[in-house]
Every structure is written in C-alpha cells, then in structure tokens.
Image 1 (tube, helix red, strand yellow):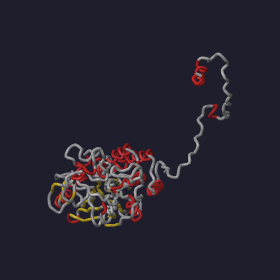
Image 2: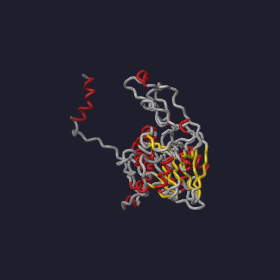
Image 3: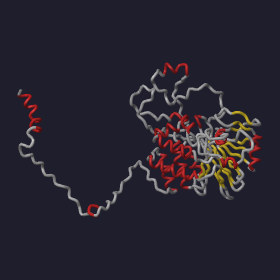
Length: 433
C-alpha cells in the first residue's frame, strides 16, 4: 500500500489538490533587450548578412560573362556540381534562346573567319576540354557548331551539356547547337544519360533537359553552300529546306505527326550503294551517292556534313567528296578511333580536317551507398550505375545469357543496371548509335 501511495501521490497532488494552495511562482525570466534600431521601431527589414559561400559552391553571375563560362569549366572539371536551382536557371535561359530559332539555322562565315564543326561527343567531357585546349574555347573570334549527341555512353554528359549551354548564353551568335538522335527520351533512357542525371540531381532536372533538347534546331546551312545535319537524308525524294522549316521539331523524334522527317534526318546513314535502302536503325534509311546529288541539286547546295557514326580517323569523305562524316569522341566505346573536327575557312568554306587523341578521364565520383543488386558487399560506396558507360572502362567480367539468367537472378531480385537489355541478337553493325 505504501508503494502504491508513493507512486500515485504526484498524480493526485496535481489533479485533485490544484487550487487549494498558492500556485508556485515561476522564476522570472528577463526579456531580451531590443535595441532602438529602425528595423525594430519602424518595421524596416534588417539588412541581410553577407553569406560566405562554401568552397564547393559555384557563384553563378547573371547575366553570365566569358569569365563565368571559364570558371564553370574549371568548377565542373574538378567534379563539383551546381545547385539544382542553378542548373534549372541555365537550362530555362537556353530554352528561351532556342525557342526563337528556326528549324534550319542560317550561319554566315565571312572571309578571314573560321567555323569549327564538332561531331558526337557522347559524354566525354575531358576530351571536349582537350579539344578546347587544342583549338581554343568558343569566343566571338572562334565560333563553334556542335552537331548533336552531347550525351549518353560517356559518364559526363551533364557536364558537357552545362558547358555548351553556358557558352551558348555567353556567345549566342557564335555557338550553335544542333540536335542529335541521342537528345531524346528514347536514347537517354537506354544509354545512360537519364540514370546519370537522376544520380547527380533528380528526375525534375532530367525532364527539364529533355524539354530543352526538343527546342534544338535540327540542321544548319552555312553560307548557303553547306548543309549540316546529325544523321542524313530522307526516305523520299524532293525534300526541301522550306519543308524542314515548316515541320514541328518540338517533339520526341519518331512521334512527330506526318512522315517523320525529324527522326529520319537524325538517324539515317550514307552507303556506297545507289538508291535508298532499309536501315537497321529505328528510323531513317541508308542513302547512296545519287540521293546526296539529288538533295544538293534541289536545294542549291554543294556539300553535306554529318556525324552519327564512328570513324577510325575521326572523319571520312564519301559520295565523291560531297559528304563528310565527322566524329569527335576518341576511343569511343573502348575503340581505338581518333577524334576529328573540321574548320570551315572563309566565305567559300574550305575544309580543314583535324584530329586529336583521347585523354585519361577520371572515374565518376560515387553518388550512392546502395549496393548493387548482384553485389555481396553490404553498405559500401559504389560507383554510380551509369559509370559502366564510361568509354575505356571495361564492363564487369561476367558473361550473361538468357539461359542462365534465372539461376543468377532469382525471383524478386533486381537485374543489374550494367547488363545490356534482353533482346534477340542482331547482325553486326558497322556503326554505334
């Protein structure tokens, strides 16, 4: 009984004996002294304190200047990341610029000037920086045209896109960006860019990139002489530049209404055989020398420059010298190819062929501590799931075939992200998408 009383006494003394005696006085607490400042008396907001930026934060000056672009390149080269709000600000500003451009860009090169044409870069950011070291960064006296496929395959597509977008904001009339087949949801979901953006940022930023890619012009005409396009020509005769300017490019390639000219020009490839032939790619065709002659004649042009296919020397000349392929991703997909780029000189666009070698690329910074589905290690930092797309880095030494998949991946486990999609084998191709 004594134990029960001692246990219940605090409860009874609080609830049944309240008010029977003087309530205990709380200790006096001195109120803070309010200084006689305008913000306290007149309601004027206090002046915000200057915040010292952290060492890993980038100070994005707006509008951006050439110094801002140079600082951003060094910031990204150190594998540091912008804040999501900064990324969205850059992407939205570039989308506004691109929305005002036509489908077919009209670019002028005057006497005494050069225009550098760069092919596929495929997320190989440090090779792009090497190209800038060799050829000089973009500027008013050193204009560039990038012919699509900035992302996928390589592990630094975000860094390439942000660098090119920043240069586009700084030099809107001297940096020209065209769309490639990999600037699409279909390719980025399969070849690594979507996973890269999700690991580095989030899905919202990935969607912003995709929306901005839809506004990229699809081709360009230089001095009314040279036609530049990522892939190639079309499934039918008689396509004119006026038709290309009338089509709706703000869509996913292959989903546009009509005959799909956008998808065709992003996916087609040249061939030595005359005529048009079916392609192993999802869209477009394989077109011969006579198709090139016909398109140039109808549109009063002299040459076609395209990319889209790897070349051992970084470039190739085909169709009697009227079609040039340039590819600017050296050592692409563990290959031994060189990187190539072109310089179009003067009013008559004399072509200078240039090459450069690949440079070592650092391993992407880990962004996750989640173990891989096939990993036996627990809670150890791993490389991002898109790191397997890094050129020059071999895939895990495991051979997976559909016949042994059930034994390796029992029901309820997730298939590793680095495995290729399960599809029936296709005939060997001479070009990577």
